[in-house]
Image (cartoon, one colour):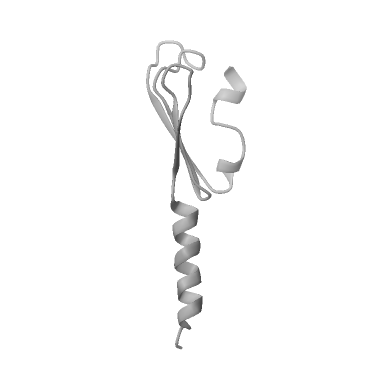
Length: 77
């Protein structure tokens, strides 16, 4: 079975777009996020609102859960 060149190029473009992260810095004391269509990484550097005493925590969300609210924050903030 031979794969058409246009189909292969379209699949490669879709994969590149869905896995390219967009970095953001938040003004809450050091939280940064890296968001893409396929995943979200939330790095709480000073997470005093969620867990007092814990200064750094990283959460990774994989599609489709990355389209919802941030992990842990919506329950305890």
